Length: 312
Ligand code: R2B
Ligand code: URA
Image (cartoon, rainbow, N blue to C red; front, side, top):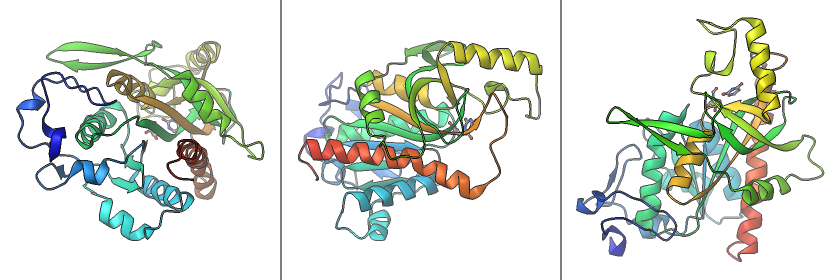
């Protein structure tokens, strides 16, 4: 598979900086959860043109994103066959490719996301990709922010309200800093059009490891907080500059930074947590809301590709 499987001890890809001395000992690289192997796939040929990796929670939503990107970029391939020929769907994650944009679903929470990221980083390295940007599109709860607002993360905090995410290995904690590229976050916000009928704001994000107790909800199966404690906590978040709560931002931003890649997170608020715990049970509204980060991120991708004379 060309030069890219010829890895030296510490791996420095063009932009993907893998630091695992043991990878070079492998003759075949099998990305187990994506169902991709260097024995059967030519990574540089299949993925070498990737410039953006767009991730989000569900397979359906990300299939929609891949179709939307393909349409917006006027890709000549038929969308269905593009998804069928390039989507290596397994039961765990889904993966699509629309020209220079790789689109994947990550499930719920950082543990699920992390597994995908390890394999995507290896994929990009093996393909020899340059200057790749990761973009997460998702849903969240707003903190003093009306539902339907898109929040771009200008920082992310863990459950202890610190800008780090912690992984565990060999019985020990590995704490990695959350680093946001502020220029990228601002560029993304600049893609919100005047004509949009919803606000797109910058704010800090609380990255929780749970949807219920971890996000100060009182409607889970177990609940250890009182209404007063919940209210004080949400007010504390607001004071810290936190404008939304979701479950993957800190892990994505910390791991991308660890391998030298830029990343940004744009999520739409389904509920203002100062007013309610549960998102509205209105399918049509939820679907319209979920389009908003997709539209924003696609505009951003288009403008970057055009500015770099890749696709106009
Ligand atoms: C947003 O929505 C999911 C929980 O419902 C989670 O993946 C997240 O970050
Ligand atoms: N996703 C979350 O993690 N929290 C919310 O409140 C809504 C969506």
